[in-house]
Length: 238
Image 1 (cartoon, one colour):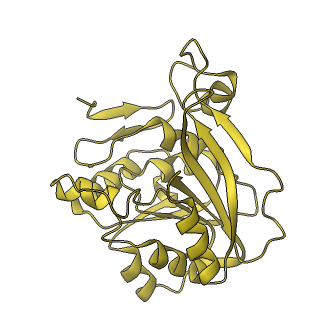
Image 2 (cartoon, rainbow, N blue to C red):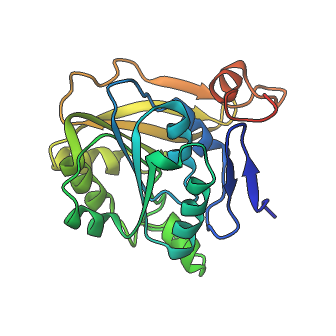
């Protein structure tokens, strides 16, 4: 059974109420999304425990809004925000991203999302987990439409996706006028590809020229130097 909490160097993620717990690929996502001094406003779509928002708060001075539909996860994320060093910069909205889009005029320099993985596989019967894992509450097309309208002119969105859904995501991005490409391929080891991070913008100018490769563990099942370098400011024992 997963712990009811996950302790990082500068914050704690309580996770007993959230369907999806802290996992390594999400931590890699939070540590590798590019941030800089020109990013003033960040949106985390489907924040869950608040992990990505907290990691980006540690890495930047930006104001961060997080949206979460599930009531239990929203309460958990709110508590995690309030007990973090960055509570003044973190705001949680308990709603769907579709409804949030309807009542806000805000635009964001950076949007991050770890969206539902699966569009056609069997559900588990656990409503909260199915909401997190399946696209029944947020389709790829809806996600891309919202992203287009909520990005600033020079903004970027990064999404951590299943390796089986990349074509669907990039096709949906193109359909609403976004330019997208694969930003990073994530491997559990040198051979097992587990996730992609895609990058989408309203223009192609600042899309990365080269795809990055990130390997979590080496042949001895130890964390790679690349992983240690990326996560050393977050993981307690790195």
